[in-house]
Image 1 (cartoon, rainbow, N blue to C red):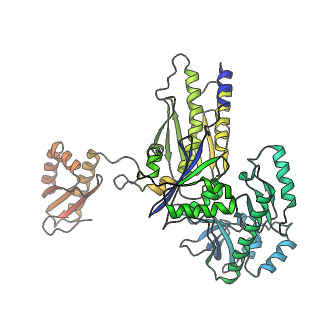
Image 2: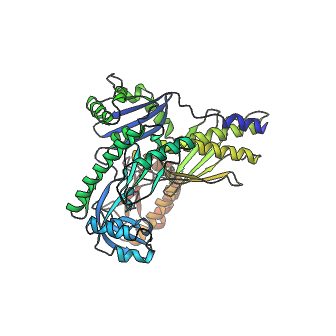
Image 3: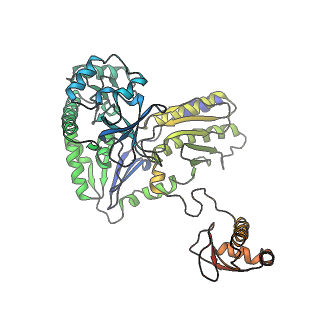
Length: 523
């Protein structure tokens, strides 16, 4: 029975019968949604005034070198210094003329600089060309590298690296051999490298030739700015969300792109025309009075998907808790009891959870360390099948992922590349009442804290004999109904007078002590 369950589940693939992209252009932000058979599979948003800097290339200046951290801190002109680790630093992006750098790089290309060499290569005050690999997150500055790369439709050009390769997600041996022949035939300048992207699978050779020519022209423009602009300065800005969508998501299996703004639709048609004139027909201007994301039921799916609890088809559910350095995902059976075949219900719930977790990571753009607590299964083979299912579902993820085997406790640890803040942090701010904890102090706890504050204030300021206490209405209700005798006793002990007033402007955990005579606030 166990093996039948495993065979039945591993044959299933995520439903991808119909793909379409919806692009909503609003005054404050762009939103892009990828739908597969009507279900929201990927979501991206970009605030017009808060564009991320991941992918941008800067001519920066080394502010200081920290040998203990094995890192350089580089001023790129965006506020906080960027973090450049020794292993992300290669001499090819050193300041000085490009020709001098190229000769030095070619001469020493077989020698990898040791860690102790980096401060000599990049002393404080030197100029360096860097690309942002991870935007500022929380209190941390951007993470940068000198290993520059430019992404095209089918290729990724590395101006400072001679590495060549084909996306690992293209696993057909015949296709890899065909792409290898095309790669060998391309006229790539000395000292540069190329990576074939997954979208290039099945593409004709002329598409790669055209893409390479475009990337080389783009690099020439960047290189001119590197030589002419002072440090720090931006020399290349990553395309906006709409441009990246056309570049990365408009594949042959996408039936249409719906755009709710005519000017944006026109711009997208022009961009698509540079790639494939045939694909221009897929661009559809949406003019219905009902907002596009409502018409396609995307708004409802967003509200459902971004809840802490996400339901599964069988009746189970997952709970996602996102902290700064770790994301915990808990899988629960919920209503999926399974009767006599409880083992089958647990296995089914875990398999559904594996797919939903992969989807949620993409939707929320969650990165960093992720720990998934699957429901305990008796058979090891079932656990292996669940992990395999998870690996299959994250294959489509453009962010790099790494998944470890399931532990004896049913835990799966994985990492997902973090490039920028998750969508959760972009859409929400910590609750001002609970400061992001998800809970507020009880009225009883607040009563205790207020009484302590009153005792402290009147002992530190013996001249004050009357206090006015402003509290949240829910706290005042507790003080009036259950703690009245305690407060009267407090007045007698302190030989003072207390006046309590409600203030709806205060949060549930806030209160203010005032001198009742002068009205001055008491710290």
